[in-house]
Image 1 (cartoon, one colour):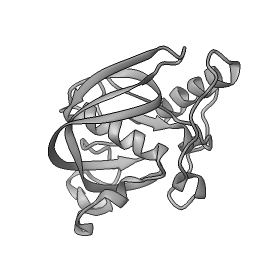
Image 2 (tube, rainbow, N blue to C red; image 1 turned 30 degrees about the vertical axis):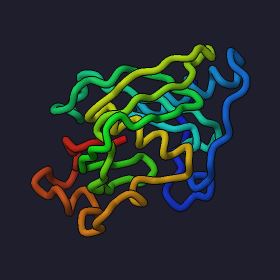
Image 3 (cartoon, rainbow, N blue to C red; image 1 turned 135 degrees about the horizontal axis):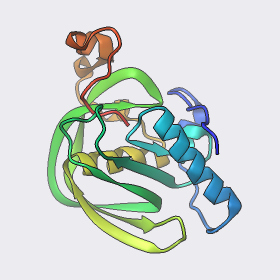
Image 4 (cartoon, rainbow, N blue to C red; image 1 turned 90 degrees about the vertical axis):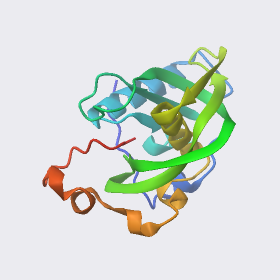
Length: 183
């Protein structure tokens, strides 16, 4: 369908709580999801939330397969997750580098729960749930944060570990295609 512009940090829509999806199997929802996948692919992202492309609805997508940008992470199944809920399965957290299509060129060390269960609806409105850990759990938490008006810099504990990719990872050169997580 279309690659849409990604809103950047500072845009007021990114600070709002998104509205639940109430109607399924509509041309509008199907077009939104298709545009989200096109946009995520064009940006080499691991996930995308509807508010990032200007739609204040509780829809996220994510997925990582054999991606050279993520050589050291386990695959994350390609997923459409609507009206999501997250349940923490273990209070243990770990910090890792995150980036975001709405915060281009920057990275931060972000704490996330290591193990979660998430549930919601698929594109057809059918319920499902899945357990996730590690990078998969991180991606889900990052995307669901977008639906609640939270960007990853708000979760960083120590701002010394937040900066431009080119400064944080100079060994990767001026055209940073960092091996660390990017939404």
